[in-house]
Length: 498
Image 1 (cartoon, one colour):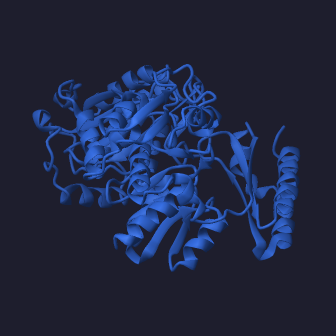
Image 2 (tube, rainbow, N blue to C red):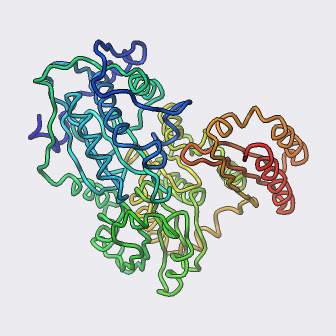
Image 3 (cartoon, rainbow, N blue to C red):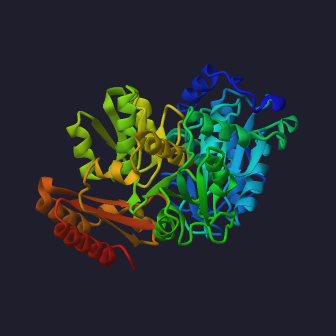
């Protein structure tokens, strides 16, 4: 099936779903000891909220990627209903610009081909391009090498199933069981996979972005793009220019040694300055793999995912394209957003932090729009995963069609409650993952919740992507937010750091 990889409509939908259901009830059959030696792994689950992520040379190594590719290939083959014989199967492999990404890509590719899977290496590309192409071709899965918004020393590996969504917990555990067992499935020599290097698949993703806007032109719109030295550099500037926008680009070359460093969606200062300096209408900052985006209006004001969801939700409401007026978001979403959306007859559903949880709730409820305050936005009308470029383009479309500025649209939306988020670095993995057993911290949380009542809320959690405990306090009064944030951070530092 190699020659047909990037032609649509070639995958059977029934077979993979049946195989996925059966795999969740039965482990992979393994029969031989691994010839690759033992693999040192940390205690606790390897998969976090966004795949496997960590510092390169510590958790993320070439041996881990080799084993991970092998076991991911086996799980994806079983999910697609393929045995260990000669049935051909393809996995799409993408990467961001980090200096460690080529090393991990080679090791993953070796493991995947050892599992009898053909590999289509995309090279530098956004994560949503991997998800989109996996869903719209006969590929049985996709892998993306990226640590998203993390600093250059980190990297990560995300795995998508044949439908272009992140693997569920059962399939992740199947892969991890293989990694920890040191045993492997028997494969015939005729089953080795190979690399495929023909075609221009990224162009198909670009065409989808253009088509999603219909006849909307961005002519006359002045846009600043902060590409964070990452995956968005592969195509973002050209996509906006092709649609007629006047574009200024910041951090626009792939540079793995500077990815996300004082730029991108976690550092908006340069973008805010550039929007004002160039008298632009709007600015967008992407993270390292371009699956999320934050905006800046013409006044230099940051516009987060809550505002984007509210505005896009209203737009879909007017088109009768938002079932039950429901938006899915996470526990991080601002109370002001929730109460304003409910006041106009909408429903806001909250999940745990992580776009995979948002996507799962959208699938369960039939909701068409969801996302995170951090800028992961999912619109099922166009795709099944967070897509920063798609989101930015549709926010531009809202501005163009409204005849108003982004600032005016935001001013007419909702007033957020004061909110503070503080991150405390906790390097001890066990301490971090077991923070809920810390009695002094639980006592402090209980006192804060009693004081706030229905005027606010507390959220303490371990990051699924970084060695951090995140403390978030939100309340109608800023003084309460500042007081309880300070108190809770002190307790975390006293009892979990050290």
